[in-house]
Length: 440
Image (tube, rainbow, N blue to C red):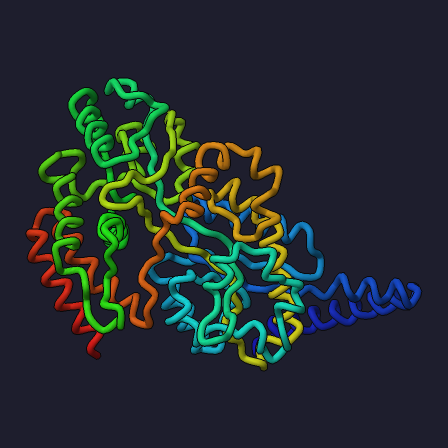
């Protein structure tokens, strides 16, 4: 150690001693009750909260966390917004390294392959955390509550339901000679609207898949496929079940929208097209509401049209959870604080609906006067909720190898969508790859 470092260290130690003496003198001047109060205020638990949200719903969750931190003096949330595509890999890595966040997010469709990284909430080392947090099943939407259990153990506390819906530009509808208050509900009405927008405006008619990422194009194809009463795998989950007449009809329709009808072009971003006023109709999730509203576009929202035999849309649910924790790094007290923070977030999840566009799973929040009076509810969420109640929502594949199955399908569906591979060949290649995944 150099002399100036020794001097600096001595000065720091002297300052620390003086500060400690001053602090002790101040505490000595206080009554025992005041001493306990001061010590309690000085002791703050910080919980890392890791999410996968982005864009509008990331901003909405940031708003909720800021509200939590303003309302709570002894517990604070440190919000870590991860990337959607890498989120689960990062979560598994953190749990494996013994450095997991205290609170996280898990989709209902992923519980079967993620549960090993999660804390069983009713059988934790700190006891029954649901009881500790005052979390009661009756206060949550039943369908989402039941999806948080795997092999008899509860791992998830529901946050929301989310799904894709039908967004449309009212001004472009008028320019195309369409009634902006009567959006299409059938395939025939939809196709007439798309053709009219293409022929009578200079805008793109339709985008089927948000920003056209691989997983989004797969979801668009699944909506058409599921709408025929089909499922991706055989009932025993051991073989692909989509390389058939229904799978081909769905993919051919999706590809034809771009390459035969010319309603859009491959590689385009529907989010950006719609926000720029250059797109007539868009399939996109409820999280798009903040962006659509901020864009200034005169937009409407409606149910996904009935493209095939039954009205169908893609949907899932976000859940709050507690990753597995190392006892030497996370105390039982922190586990209890985490479940109480989860309850607080749900109690204020009307903000999640208003600013994030999601349907709260916590029933008192769903009935919140502030939510029901919001533009989000009036324009979009009321119809999203109606789609859920009507049974239009189809969850993604729930299977231990679901991520691998999806990853095997996506590049081939995308290649067909981009016009590089015929739909029939794309499905054959996807089938072979999925069966290889399932056989390992």
